[in-house]
Image (cartoon, rainbow, N blue to C red; front, side):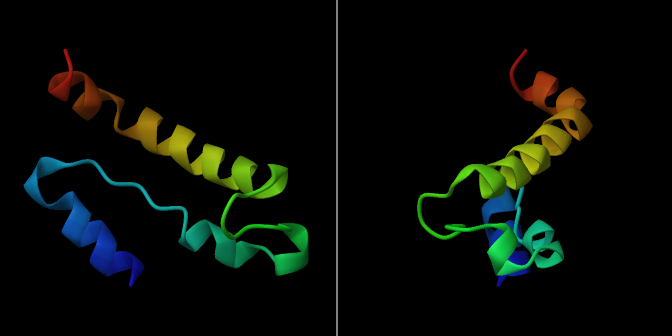
Length: 66
């Protein structure tokens, strides 16, 4: 499902990131409340994914929004 959404949302040149795979490295007890409105530990996982996505795609983002 994750790959479907990445492909679908990525059509048309949109940049897409997903934190789905990152959560497989954790037990549910390590990330309480990771569904819906998340708490601190889950937000840290998402923030890390977003940071790496933005730093890896920085040149592409700059070209889209000079």
